[in-house]
Structure formats: structure tokens, C-alpha cells
Image (tube, rainbow, N blue to C red; front, top):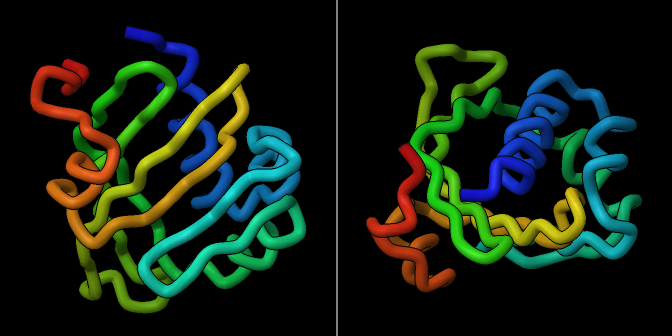
Length: 124
């Protein structure tokens, strides 16, 4: 297990949840790629814009890791309506303690399939 990559992803979530954009950027590579099923963007400016549009607090659930790839199960809770929750999963690539890419998937199974991670990669 690499605690470094996992710690980077957890710190990245903390910065996003607290709207600490400077820390979020410092944890991300200059050419970070951010994406989901609706499209993708690249770079610190795109990351800032994406983070400013974030309308949910994200609670990390199960974590999977192998070779610089971290997949996290997420519970998203609306900042304006705490009763409005949903689940998702994000796949991160971490290199030298910087997130180089993050892609949000609709569910954990899809994120694991996209990254070829399995139950053997679950961190306990």
C-alpha cells in the first residue's frame, strides 16, 4: 500500500470540501485533467472553475489502490439540501504526490472497471 498517494487524494478531497482552492491547486499537477461523463478539462484554471461550481460535500468511503491509481467511493451531499445525497466514485492518478487526473464515474463498479482495479486492491 502507498499511503502517500492515498494521503494526497484524501487531502485533495478535504481541500475541495473546504473550498481551499490554493491547497487544491498545490496538490494537483500543472496539467491536471478533470473529467466526467459530460466532458473533460485540463489545467489549474479549469480545476479552479470546476471546484468553484462544486455544490456538494464529498465523503470518502472505500478506497482502492494500485500503481499510482486510487479509486474512491464517494457520498455526495448537497450543500444547500442535506437530504439530497447521491453516490459516485472517482478515479485518480497520482504522480509524485500530485493528482495528475481525476475522473468521476456514476458508481464504484464503473470506476473499478475503467481502472482495472479489483477487490484485491481494496485498502483496509
